[in-house]
Image 1 (cartoon, helix red, strand yellow):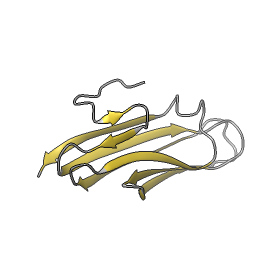
Image 2 (image 1 turned 90 degrees about the vertical axis):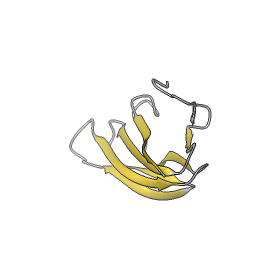
Image 3 (image 1 turned 180 degrees about the vertical axis):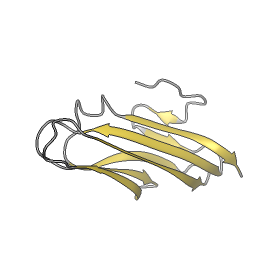
Length: 106
């Protein structure tokens, strides 16, 4: 589900954001792991390279979330997406959020 997508630069089918112009962009994400005793790792990928990751792996809780955020210098047509590196998310990506926006055009 997409709540706001001004300019349609986030493709819901592929879950990839494509930068419309060069600039500084802000990205953040929040994910929730399933109830079992496992560790999750989610990475924010820029042009298929990991930039930042978030982990959740406490063995003593049934619900745990992982979040992270970053400012990125992006060129026009650069792509950003999330990648589940390890584990399983609660409801797949249903309870996860991903946000991005242009902070400063260059």
